[in-house]
Length: 265
Image (cartoon, rainbow, N blue to C red; front, side, top):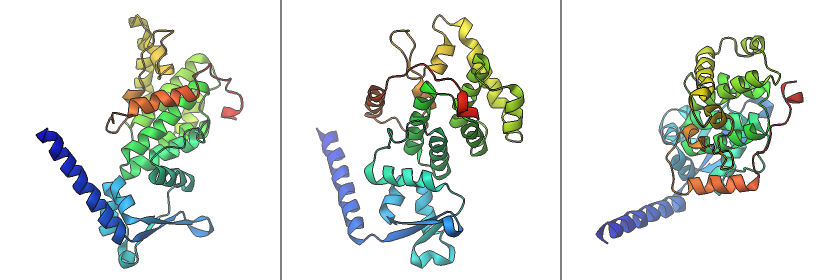
């Protein structure tokens, strides 16, 4: 009872702090992109600071520069479409999963954006969207290139995409080793592909194929394949997160991947 009371007091205090800040909070003007294509958004300071320590520091020091007093942040190199998804998630606290169906390039951009600013929950939402897409279709060239170009070696996004590339090569779905070399030249991709190949080839040493766990990451009771999607998450495991995934799966059950076709065109 005492512990519950302490928890309640802390939450009540936190609520009061947020309410007070919202009453006096200022709007931060966020500019994405450059030139005629730049977009400007007005976002409450407290909302930005609550999702990432990066924005706390940027608003105080780094990114505001001479415009500190006017409350302006500029991100000229960021993807505008990914920011739109981030703003939707920021305001609604939910990811537009159905709207993201089949948009693997945008899912990659969202993961990269979350990684850049330390928004792990947003990264995990983007990863779920990407894993769901890979359940039903092969990744296109641009999504593969963006994943490696936008992340450092060892990132979870690189791991997932490298496994998909290895699976594509093994299944003869349009990619060739020469394609990979041309696509990812200079992006330090060899290590990720080598590790993905080892995980993929490990299937023969398991009664339940590790290969199946890679290509069916949400699991299959019928085929006795355990779900492995959690291995690709980078953020804190919220109690409701597994329930979110279960609901996500109910929206659209995994099916056989469509032929590669125009995906690599």
